[in-house]
Length: 273
Image (cartoon, rainbow, N blue to C red; front, top):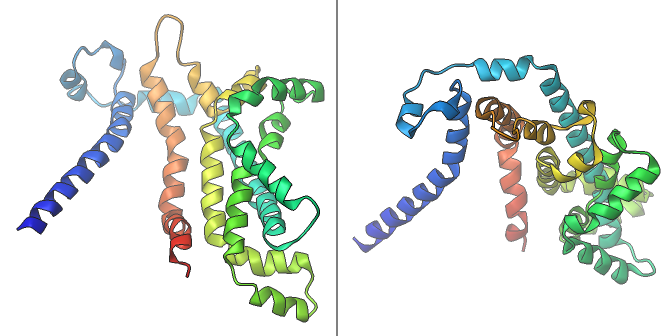
């Protein structure tokens, strides 16, 4: 009886937490399916209002929205691939190679993790201006091609891998590049998947730096473009929520496709002996 009560309470708490997480998504979709949702006075009147797809049609039919979406896809994919490649190389070097200043350099990388992004906002902006990269993909991509978190994550994971296969490959005459990309990289597939999704989501939702580094409409990403639905006097809630709903589709697709790899990567460290 006691176990039954505990199970009911546990599932009840989990259901409440799940409802709290799902409600913002439900609210976004509800507003996006109503024409002029700000005109409804109560939640029930909004809920009973007729469903329309006009906001989605307007968003998809807009040239600027398609441009924002394309910019976000390009930046997100290039930065994600860059992080998976360069963080793998750096993590392998820290995990397997010995070189002068290795402990100090790794501590420096860990130190960067505790620095808030807002601290580097002004110096990074000045650097982009000096390079002439404002309103270019270079400013949106190059500063984020490798991250301290990715290096740390790959280093910790590679350290937990057995070295027997790598040693056998060296005996057979394999070079370091062959070992890295043909032996270590396939073994790191779970953690690379987790890192890739983490980096993609971070860049897909990034607002501050794309907003700073772009002042032309043609270079804006989705989060920056959606912000312009918020006017000085009013907010176009219908089109804003429709745009946000469309921008959430790639995130949901990523989770549906790679949810097994995400769980495997997150639990891999706990399953190692």
